[in-house]
Length: 380
Image 1: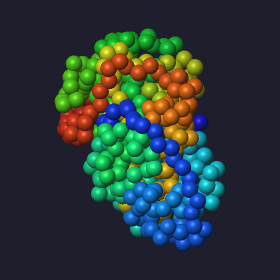
Image 2: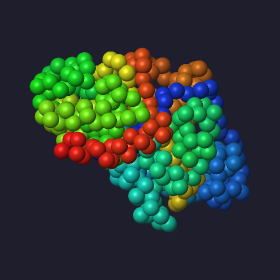
Image 3: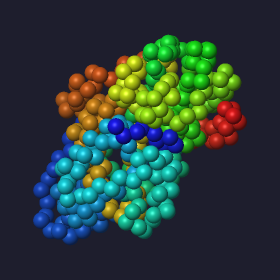
Image 4: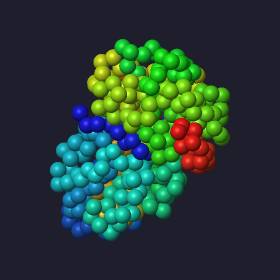
């Protein structure tokens, strides 16, 4: 099984889990021309939507002529990405998929794009957290997928620079054979959890870790306008000797090195395969939810393949693959209304909190700044 680390991965999501009416992705026949535009006469680098490029068939032809797609930071055990990548390869065997640095962070994705700008090795697309996305909009090419109308306005940048793709709720996973089920945040401060509680990365860079602080904040009576109560909680956890400074991976969970873990519910759920005693809880009270985002590299060496990948990800089939991986796809509500949602997979999702919050772009940015100033000293 591929190790899930993304130790510095993904800055905070900060987008609500909701979607709107359905719009099915359809394939239309296009020109048989094999020119770089797929017969549309449009340069893929400037195409801001499928309609602007031509048809799906045109885009497929152009992408197949390029013959390559470069992806980055996509662990196969993360939200079912292994099956998603395999499905793309099966559907488009003429396109070679190069997978770079599965455990890279959102920040490292951007660094890779800048370092490799102008080279065939640069990433074509990003799967990225909101904070890093907001800091790097100049790196993205605007693109609106065919299912754009299905996606709620608060889950997408208005010009298509980045778009929410899948999300979940912050949860706590634990080895039930060694630790009691936490019923509140304060339980984790008890001696029962000595040297046992880990978060998935550094919250100044990692989306899951950022969200862990966000959850601690709202569960400690704080608000998303000020993450200080969340930072204070982890400072208490450190002083109690319960904070475990080990990057969470499949291997650390399987070995018992990280027996209690703050992480997204769909990632914590995967560890059941590594530890049969592993259980996942979403704490009662206010929950913390969020989405990751898709973006196209403005300097993508394979611009048609990049846009075809985006269309693929937002299709019904792949939205259901994310769902089967335990994540909540961004078009979930629209697909449910249209009758295209995998109901069995949806029924397996953990029950959502009755009340949940997500930071706005402004709150996310402010929280990131505060963490940069306060986090290291709080947990040293």
